[in-house]
Amino acid sequence: MNPGTATVEGQRASLSAPARLRNLLRSPELEFVMSAHDGISARIVAEAGFPAIWASGLSISTVMGARDNNEISWTQLVAAVEVMADMTSIPIIVDGDTGFGDFNNARRLARKLGQVGAAGVCIEDKVFPKANSFVGAHHQLANIDDFCAKLRACRDTSPDLVLIARVEAFICGAGLDAALERAEAYRQAGADAIFMHSRLTVPDEIVAFMARWDNALPVVIAPTTYAAAGAQLFRDAGVSVAIWANHTLRAAVAEMRRAARTIREEEGPARIEQDLTPLSELFELMDYDELLHAEERYYGHLR
Image (tube, rainbow, N blue to C red; front, side, top):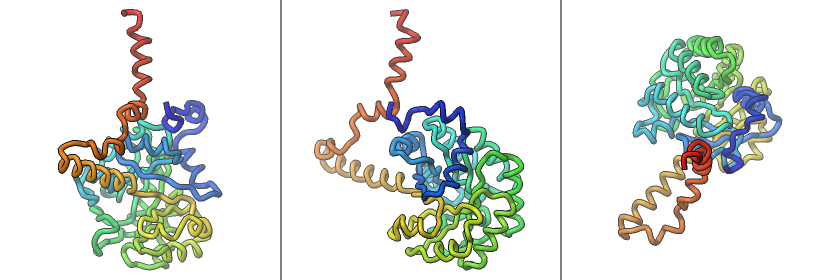
Protein backbone atom coordinates (compact mmCIF):
# COMPACT_ATOMS: atom_id res chain seq x y z
CA MET A 1 0.00 0.00 0.00
CA ASN A 2 1.25 3.52 -0.77
CA PRO A 3 2.40 5.47 2.33
CA GLY A 4 -0.17 8.18 1.73
CA THR A 5 -3.04 5.71 1.68
CA ALA A 6 -1.99 3.51 4.58
CA THR A 7 -4.08 3.64 7.71
CA VAL A 8 -2.09 5.42 10.42
CA GLU A 9 -3.33 3.38 13.36
CA GLY A 10 -1.00 4.88 15.95
CA GLN A 11 -1.90 8.45 15.02
CA ARG A 12 -5.59 7.60 14.83
CA ALA A 13 -5.44 6.09 18.31
CA SER A 14 -3.62 9.06 19.87
CA LEU A 15 -5.39 11.96 18.16
CA SER A 16 -8.86 12.19 16.67
CA ALA A 17 -9.39 13.66 13.20
CA PRO A 18 -10.85 16.88 14.67
CA ALA A 19 -7.84 17.19 17.00
CA ARG A 20 -5.43 16.78 14.09
CA LEU A 21 -7.35 19.42 12.13
CA ARG A 22 -7.19 21.84 15.06
CA ASN A 23 -3.44 21.32 15.22
CA LEU A 24 -3.23 22.03 11.51
CA LEU A 25 -5.16 25.28 11.89
CA ARG A 26 -2.94 26.37 14.78
CA SER A 27 0.31 25.46 13.05
CA PRO A 28 2.80 28.34 12.83
CA GLU A 29 3.40 27.34 9.21
CA LEU A 30 1.15 28.01 6.23
CA GLU A 31 -0.58 24.72 5.43
CA PHE A 32 -2.18 23.66 2.15
CA VAL A 33 -5.32 21.55 1.77
CA MET A 34 -6.52 19.97 -1.49
CA SER A 35 -10.08 19.40 -2.67
CA ALA A 36 -11.65 16.00 -3.29
CA HIS A 37 -15.12 14.90 -4.32
CA ASP A 38 -15.25 11.10 -4.08
CA GLY A 39 -13.34 8.10 -2.80
CA ILE A 40 -10.67 7.93 -5.49
CA SER A 41 -9.92 11.66 -5.42
CA ALA A 42 -9.69 11.55 -1.62
CA ARG A 43 -7.15 8.76 -1.79
CA ILE A 44 -5.15 10.60 -4.46
CA VAL A 45 -5.02 13.72 -2.28
CA ALA A 46 -3.77 11.65 0.66
CA GLU A 47 -1.23 9.89 -1.55
CA ALA A 48 0.10 13.28 -2.69
CA GLY A 49 0.93 14.12 0.91
CA PHE A 50 -1.64 16.78 1.74
CA PRO A 51 -2.41 16.90 5.48
CA ALA A 52 -6.17 17.31 5.02
CA ILE A 53 -8.97 17.21 2.43
CA TRP A 54 -11.49 19.86 1.43
CA ALA A 55 -14.74 18.07 0.58
CA SER A 56 -15.72 20.61 -2.05
CA GLY A 57 -19.39 21.46 -2.44
CA LEU A 58 -18.79 22.62 -6.00
CA SER A 59 -16.97 19.43 -6.93
CA ILE A 60 -19.37 17.04 -5.17
CA SER A 61 -22.36 18.77 -6.76
CA THR A 62 -20.75 18.69 -10.19
CA VAL A 63 -19.98 14.96 -10.16
CA MET A 64 -23.61 14.38 -9.14
CA GLY A 65 -24.76 16.34 -12.18
CA ALA A 66 -25.94 19.35 -10.17
CA ARG A 67 -24.94 22.98 -9.84
CA ASP A 68 -23.34 24.48 -6.75
CA ASN A 69 -26.57 26.23 -5.75
CA ASN A 70 -27.81 23.85 -3.04
CA GLU A 71 -29.22 21.57 -5.74
CA ILE A 72 -28.02 18.44 -3.93
CA SER A 73 -29.42 17.56 -0.53
CA TRP A 74 -27.48 17.50 2.71
CA THR A 75 -27.96 13.73 2.85
CA GLN A 76 -26.24 13.39 -0.53
CA LEU A 77 -23.36 15.49 0.79
CA VAL A 78 -23.05 13.36 3.92
CA ALA A 79 -23.08 10.16 1.82
CA ALA A 80 -20.25 11.49 -0.36
CA VAL A 81 -18.20 12.44 2.71
CA GLU A 82 -18.71 8.99 4.23
CA VAL A 83 -17.18 7.38 1.14
CA MET A 84 -14.23 9.76 1.31
CA ALA A 85 -13.71 9.08 5.02
CA ASP A 86 -13.68 5.33 4.32
CA MET A 87 -10.90 5.81 1.77
CA THR A 88 -8.41 7.82 3.82
CA SER A 89 -7.34 8.61 7.37
CA ILE A 90 -6.42 12.29 6.95
CA PRO A 91 -8.86 14.91 8.30
CA ILE A 92 -11.72 16.03 6.06
CA ILE A 93 -13.11 19.57 6.11
CA VAL A 94 -16.60 19.58 4.64
CA ASP A 95 -17.93 22.46 2.60
CA GLY A 96 -21.31 22.70 4.32
CA ASP A 97 -22.60 25.67 2.30
CA THR A 98 -25.07 27.57 4.53
CA GLY A 99 -25.91 24.52 6.63
CA PHE A 100 -28.86 23.74 4.32
CA GLY A 101 -31.36 25.88 6.19
CA ASP A 102 -31.73 27.33 9.68
CA PHE A 103 -29.94 26.41 12.92
CA ASN A 104 -31.82 23.13 13.16
CA ASN A 105 -30.77 21.96 9.68
CA ALA A 106 -27.20 23.06 10.34
CA ARG A 107 -26.88 21.25 13.66
CA ARG A 108 -28.31 18.06 12.17
CA LEU A 109 -25.81 18.31 9.31
CA ALA A 110 -22.97 18.82 11.79
CA ARG A 111 -24.02 15.82 13.87
CA LYS A 112 -24.29 13.53 10.85
CA LEU A 113 -20.93 14.68 9.45
CA GLY A 114 -19.28 13.83 12.73
CA GLN A 115 -20.89 10.41 12.70
CA VAL A 116 -19.45 9.54 9.26
CA GLY A 117 -15.92 10.63 10.13
CA ALA A 118 -15.57 14.27 9.05
CA ALA A 119 -13.11 16.36 11.07
CA GLY A 120 -14.72 19.74 10.45
CA VAL A 121 -17.41 21.67 8.63
CA CYS A 122 -17.32 25.10 7.03
CA ILE A 123 -20.57 27.06 6.99
CA GLU A 124 -20.97 30.33 5.10
CA ASP A 125 -22.98 33.38 6.06
CA LYS A 126 -25.26 33.69 3.06
CA VAL A 127 -28.98 33.08 2.77
CA PHE A 128 -30.17 29.57 1.85
CA PRO A 129 -30.27 28.55 -0.96
CA LYS A 130 -26.85 29.94 -1.73
CA ALA A 131 -25.21 30.53 -5.10
CA ASN A 132 -21.61 29.72 -5.92
CA SER A 133 -19.50 32.72 -4.93
CA PHE A 134 -17.91 32.99 -8.37
CA VAL A 135 -21.20 33.02 -10.27
CA GLY A 136 -23.44 36.06 -10.65
CA ALA A 137 -23.61 39.27 -8.67
CA HIS A 138 -26.71 38.76 -6.51
CA HIS A 139 -25.47 37.26 -3.24
CA GLN A 140 -27.34 37.96 0.00
CA LEU A 141 -25.67 37.91 3.39
CA ALA A 142 -27.47 36.25 6.29
CA ASN A 143 -28.46 38.24 9.34
CA ILE A 144 -25.50 38.19 11.78
CA ASP A 145 -27.58 37.14 14.78
CA ASP A 146 -29.23 34.34 12.83
CA PHE A 147 -25.88 33.05 11.61
CA CYS A 148 -24.38 33.21 15.10
CA ALA A 149 -27.33 31.17 16.35
CA LYS A 150 -26.52 28.62 13.66
CA LEU A 151 -22.88 28.45 14.78
CA ARG A 152 -23.83 28.08 18.44
CA ALA A 153 -26.27 25.29 17.59
CA CYS A 154 -23.55 23.41 15.69
CA ARG A 155 -21.09 23.90 18.54
CA ASP A 156 -23.57 22.69 21.17
CA THR A 157 -24.57 19.67 19.10
CA SER A 158 -21.11 18.61 17.88
CA PRO A 159 -18.51 20.06 20.28
CA ASP A 160 -15.65 17.97 18.85
CA LEU A 161 -16.27 18.91 15.21
CA VAL A 162 -14.06 21.77 13.99
CA LEU A 163 -16.33 24.69 13.09
CA ILE A 164 -15.13 27.09 10.39
CA ALA A 165 -17.21 30.21 9.74
CA ARG A 166 -16.99 31.47 6.18
CA VAL A 167 -17.37 35.22 5.75
CA GLU A 168 -18.86 36.26 2.42
CA ALA A 169 -18.81 40.02 3.01
CA PHE A 170 -16.34 40.67 0.20
CA ILE A 171 -18.31 38.44 -2.19
CA CYS A 172 -21.44 40.45 -1.44
CA GLY A 173 -19.71 43.82 -1.72
CA ALA A 174 -20.16 44.70 1.96
CA GLY A 175 -16.55 45.77 2.52
CA LEU A 176 -13.80 45.37 5.07
CA ASP A 177 -15.54 46.77 8.14
CA ALA A 178 -18.48 44.41 7.63
CA ALA A 179 -16.08 41.49 7.17
CA LEU A 180 -14.31 42.30 10.44
CA GLU A 181 -17.59 42.77 12.31
CA ARG A 182 -18.88 39.43 11.12
CA ALA A 183 -15.66 37.56 11.79
CA GLU A 184 -15.55 38.86 15.38
CA ALA A 185 -19.20 37.93 15.97
CA TYR A 186 -18.53 34.42 14.67
CA ARG A 187 -15.46 34.10 16.90
CA GLN A 188 -17.61 34.95 19.91
CA ALA A 189 -20.25 32.45 18.75
CA GLY A 190 -17.75 29.59 18.95
CA ALA A 191 -16.07 29.29 15.54
CA ASP A 192 -12.64 27.61 15.56
CA ALA A 193 -11.46 29.46 12.44
CA ILE A 194 -12.56 32.08 9.94
CA PHE A 195 -12.72 31.38 6.20
CA MET A 196 -12.25 34.72 4.47
CA HIS A 197 -13.39 34.61 0.86
CA SER A 198 -12.66 36.90 -2.09
CA ARG A 199 -13.15 36.59 -5.82
CA LEU A 200 -10.80 39.36 -6.88
CA THR A 201 -7.85 38.41 -9.08
CA VAL A 202 -5.53 40.07 -6.56
CA PRO A 203 -5.34 39.32 -2.80
CA ASP A 204 -5.93 42.90 -1.69
CA GLU A 205 -9.11 42.16 0.31
CA ILE A 206 -7.48 39.24 2.13
CA VAL A 207 -4.34 41.22 2.96
CA ALA A 208 -6.42 44.15 4.24
CA PHE A 209 -8.46 41.83 6.46
CA MET A 210 -5.39 40.09 7.85
CA ALA A 211 -3.74 43.42 8.70
CA ARG A 212 -6.62 44.31 11.04
CA TRP A 213 -7.68 40.85 12.25
CA ASP A 214 -4.53 40.40 14.36
CA ASN A 215 -4.75 36.59 14.45
CA ALA A 216 -7.82 36.55 16.67
CA LEU A 217 -8.57 33.12 15.13
CA PRO A 218 -6.82 31.10 12.42
CA VAL A 219 -7.78 32.27 8.94
CA VAL A 220 -8.48 29.99 6.01
CA ILE A 221 -8.53 31.15 2.38
CA ALA A 222 -9.27 29.63 -1.03
CA PRO A 223 -7.04 31.54 -3.49
CA THR A 224 -8.86 30.25 -6.56
CA THR A 225 -8.78 33.56 -8.42
CA TYR A 226 -5.66 35.12 -6.88
CA ALA A 227 -3.30 32.13 -6.65
CA ALA A 228 -0.71 33.99 -8.73
CA ALA A 229 0.02 36.16 -5.68
CA GLY A 230 2.08 33.25 -4.39
CA ALA A 231 2.40 31.33 -1.13
CA GLN A 232 4.93 33.70 0.42
CA LEU A 233 2.44 36.56 0.38
CA PHE A 234 -0.07 34.36 2.23
CA ARG A 235 2.62 33.43 4.77
CA ASP A 236 3.61 37.03 5.31
CA ALA A 237 -0.04 38.00 5.81
CA GLY A 238 -0.45 35.36 8.54
CA VAL A 239 -2.87 33.01 6.77
CA SER A 240 -3.11 29.60 8.46
CA VAL A 241 -4.51 27.39 5.68
CA ALA A 242 -4.87 27.83 1.92
CA ILE A 243 -7.35 25.51 0.24
CA TRP A 244 -7.05 24.46 -3.40
CA ALA A 245 -10.80 24.22 -3.53
CA ASN A 246 -11.67 22.68 -6.91
CA HIS A 247 -8.43 21.74 -8.63
CA THR A 248 -8.74 17.95 -8.61
CA LEU A 249 -12.10 18.14 -10.37
CA ARG A 250 -10.89 20.68 -12.92
CA ALA A 251 -7.83 18.54 -13.68
CA ALA A 252 -9.99 15.44 -14.07
CA VAL A 253 -12.48 17.17 -16.39
CA ALA A 254 -9.69 18.42 -18.65
CA GLU A 255 -8.13 14.98 -18.97
CA MET A 256 -11.42 13.13 -19.40
CA ARG A 257 -12.45 15.51 -22.17
CA ARG A 258 -9.14 15.06 -23.94
CA ALA A 259 -9.29 11.28 -23.71
CA ALA A 260 -12.92 11.04 -24.81
CA ARG A 261 -12.43 13.31 -27.82
CA THR A 262 -9.25 11.60 -28.95
CA ILE A 263 -10.68 8.09 -28.67
CA ARG A 264 -13.86 9.18 -30.46
CA GLU A 265 -11.98 10.88 -33.31
CA GLU A 266 -9.34 8.17 -33.77
CA GLU A 267 -11.56 5.18 -33.02
CA GLY A 268 -9.19 3.99 -30.34
CA PRO A 269 -6.79 5.04 -27.56
CA ALA A 270 -3.48 4.26 -29.29
CA ARG A 271 -2.22 7.86 -29.36
CA ILE A 272 -2.94 8.52 -25.68
CA GLU A 273 -2.45 5.07 -24.19
CA GLN A 274 0.90 6.09 -22.69
CA ASP A 275 -0.81 8.97 -20.88
CA LEU A 276 -3.46 6.80 -19.25
CA THR A 277 -3.01 5.43 -15.75
CA PRO A 278 -2.08 1.74 -16.08
CA LEU A 279 -4.56 -0.67 -14.56
CA SER A 280 -1.78 -1.93 -12.29
CA GLU A 281 -1.48 1.54 -10.72
CA LEU A 282 -5.24 1.78 -10.32
CA PHE A 283 -5.28 -1.60 -8.57
CA GLU A 284 -2.41 -0.45 -6.32
CA LEU A 285 -4.21 2.77 -5.46
CA MET A 286 -7.29 0.80 -4.47
CA ASP A 287 -5.22 -1.74 -2.50
CA TYR A 288 -6.23 -4.87 -4.38
CA ASP A 289 -3.29 -6.68 -2.74
CA GLU A 290 -5.08 -6.47 0.58
CA LEU A 291 -8.05 -8.29 -0.93
CA LEU A 292 -5.82 -11.01 -2.36
CA HIS A 293 -4.14 -11.49 1.02
CA ALA A 294 -7.53 -11.58 2.75
CA GLU A 295 -8.77 -14.22 0.30
CA GLU A 296 -5.71 -16.34 1.07
CA ARG A 297 -6.28 -15.92 4.80
CA TYR A 298 -9.96 -16.79 4.79
CA TYR A 299 -10.22 -19.17 1.82
CA GLY A 300 -6.72 -20.63 1.67
CA HIS A 301 -7.56 -23.64 3.83
CA LEU A 302 -10.34 -24.56 1.40
CA ARG A 303 -8.03 -24.84 -1.62
